[in-house]
Image 1 (cartoon, rainbow over the protein chains, first blue to last red):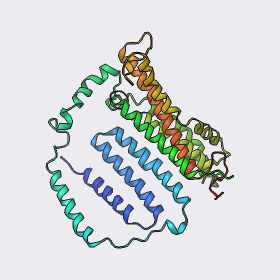
Image 2 (cartoon, chains in turn cyan, yellow; image 1 turned 120 degrees about the vertical axis):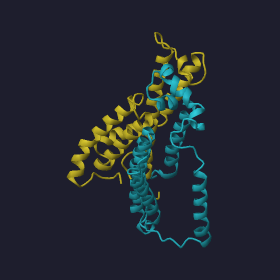
Image 3 (cartoon, each protein chain N blue to C red; image 1 turned 90 degrees about the horizontal axis):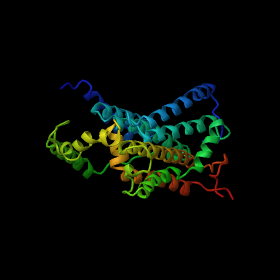
Image 4 (tube, rainbow over the protein chains, first blue to last red; image 1 turned 90 degrees about the vertical axis):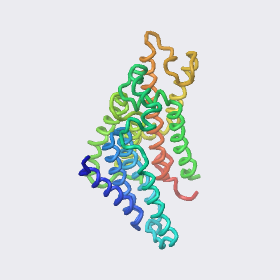
Length: 176
Length: 153
């Protein structure tokens, strides 16, 4: 297995994630977060999850950046520069230990693409075998999202609708 | 931000070229989500983003503002389409959102499911694009009529 493509992507994702947190100017942070989403979309595409990569690129790198910028332009300039205090000593000690524990636990995860892993043996064989015959939809992801799991998708649509409604109620005030 | 047209001629020209392209690609993604990556969610985001870009570039008096304001009237319409398809399945005598119970004469069960997926995807895309435009309007504190409603009244 060659790591020629994997390692630079991983380094870029970690670098952009870290600098989005560390930078003090919020507008720079928004743009770095957009590039982080783009690199993450490349990671998803590299792992074969093209639908997820598409959503990550369009929503994370596109729409969320626009929303953050619109919110920042409405913010007073003194509030878009933030001053961070030093992290507490307990966090500096405990968070690396937590990270090492997570890495240790990740060694027990099934390998990528393992046909015997629980995720590949539970319901996904049924979807892969039957979705084309049941729904005439070659893209299995769409068949699962919109047909087998249509109720979940309906409630997600309701969540988006509620988000739009909540922004309307909170932010819009008509001039009397 | 949605208060005036953008000053730069480069932004306006490239916007008038790119926005229809983004809309066309959004429609492609929406209707070909059954054959390739994409679907209602991504297509809806792209359609909404193209309207937001039109608002940001050409301002509240521009050609895209009419479409955006019309889109605001459709708040909740996409959810109604989605739930309505589920209700039609109930009327057809089956479970909620079981598209094979849609009463479409001359189609067998897989084709009915195919049609059901297309219609619900259109519903999702409508809902997402309207929500995106609505949130953009809310964040720029405009009431959809081009007036700045953000001042403390």
